Image (cartoon, rainbow over all chains, first blue to last red; front, side, top):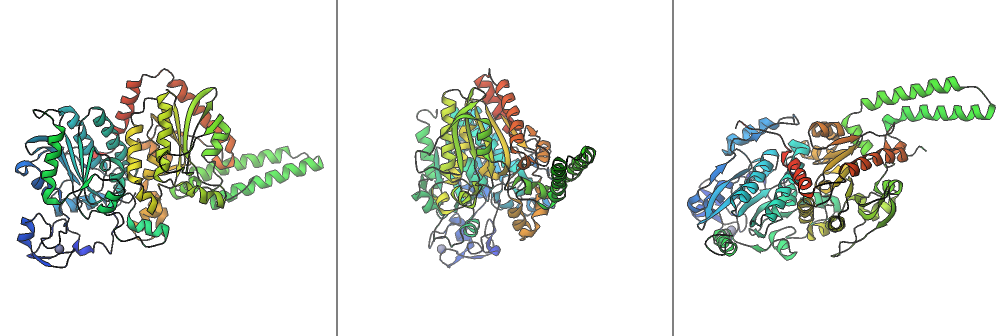
Length: 281
Length: 320
Ligand SMILES: [Zn+2]
């Protein structure tokens, strides 16, 4: 399980920030120089070519939830260091300060198109969106709250996989979240999974790839093993577009690919479908 | 008798050879060397104890991967009667990396599923070194569901470096197959026992390791990433795998302390590969115990306790 692999040719290190900053921004899709204010107004999608810049959990809360409002839960739990893994807590502390986030996922209740939902959004800028005990616990609790409150669950995923620094306990978060989804299914609570660039490995192989409806943003890298690991294993170059959203769609593992500006509209339609009458399931 | 020998095994193996030679000499010459043999046996025992109690985590990794270690099919041969292997996921193909089948364990019906590494080069290639494709996991789930449908307990045997990272595996949804197994197995209405016999390689292991009781062989490992993978991420140097193995806490003892397994199955002196039948006998006792204890299971309680067990796993601080 690779929690995050740097993919040199796909994502130069200097461009790995979650939200681009500076006055101007060069588009990675078409090379056009974009005015940042304009880019921001367009939810960080290039007006010229439609390239979707990577953005963070706060941006998705703003884009998807009514009034951009999330009643966040479980902000009081944070990473411990069960393995006494060299440098782990220091790294967490630095990332917390740098990003202002408290973990790789924010969870809680909000509304989408007037419908109450249990909502979770991951953030790739927090240790590559990796799932350790905190992410697993928060996602599990979100799933169980959706059951308790009988409201739909929406998870926006982006992750390099399990968090290596928590070792086997990270792997067990796959079991924890996956099992909770079995309970969700039994309770017949709708689950919409939204996949961002990238969603891989332990997160994809637990809760992200099992939704009643699975939506991907265009251009997202999706799969189990990272491209570099595959290339090293099979000792050949991967074809263009391998593991990208259209590939995933073509092979039948995502229901639909939706542009960021249409995301809220699409989710609202789906919620309207599930909540047949009077907002009841 | 002595196949592949790891460095730290050599002193023990050499002493054992000496004992064997002495025994043969004694037989041939009608020599009375009982005392000497007894003395050497004691010495060998101490040596084993000394070496094995001080193994580093990296040495345990080597033991877990030992090419002479008993594999799933060895245990099936020793433990299961009337075994019938069942093939295919009914969707794409049969994946030889995973064995699935039905049979009897001491007159009880059981379903058995496990990864299989190959013993010879040819077989290793055919079995893809025990690294399943999605169709392997789908086959495993299919047969486990057959067991669940008829109220038959399931035993899964874990021994894999990991799920295969390849083009076909991605095209056919490796992540989805693993995710689905985790979710579906977590609420199967029959008792499930998992035994990790060698390598528990990440998600590829977990996909058949959702169980009411998870046991691990003394010299087996279970990890989120291989020490080699961890070392190349941390230090860009696979040669630092021994340090990575230390950091990952992947031995049976570590796993028990971290609360992710329910028990350790002791191995015969020198490890399971030195006495396959002996190892099988020790496993048999655990299967027997599990089947006895879960004989009159209540389905709801069984599933509830299984879910709650995984819900509890993880360590975090709660003060913000
Ligand atoms: Zn562009």
